[in-house]
Length: 157
Image 1 (tube, rainbow, N blue to C red):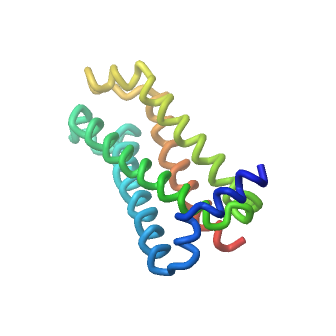
Image 2 (cartoon, rainbow, N blue to C red):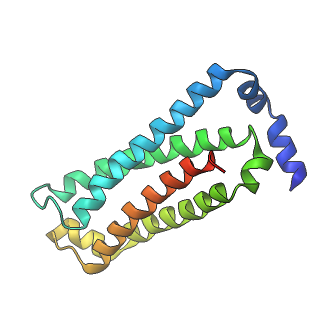
């Protein structure tokens, strides 16, 4: 594992970020943009699935929000992996980073569960919001906010 981490740290992209504050600044800003897009799309969708804003048509909101959230997640993961290569040993030893990864896996798993749920398809057809659908939506909002907080916590440990 140490060899892999050393290779990541020696990757030209990591060397560039370590030597250029400007490059690091722009990549970090792109990471934050990805997080903003992710949370900005998923929180309103989750709140709608939890039962708020019933006048907003779910068949319109769900496809748009899901795609926007997926784009934000893709950007956040790609930039996050690149940022990780700057100090991979330190990040893996950081409890907040480990916590963030665990929360991220739970949040993505919750999304997969929600999208595979027959209740979601049913709600798109007839507008019903099952208890399970609502609970997964509430869990999603809490998990993504926790991922965000854990990410901010990394720099303080």
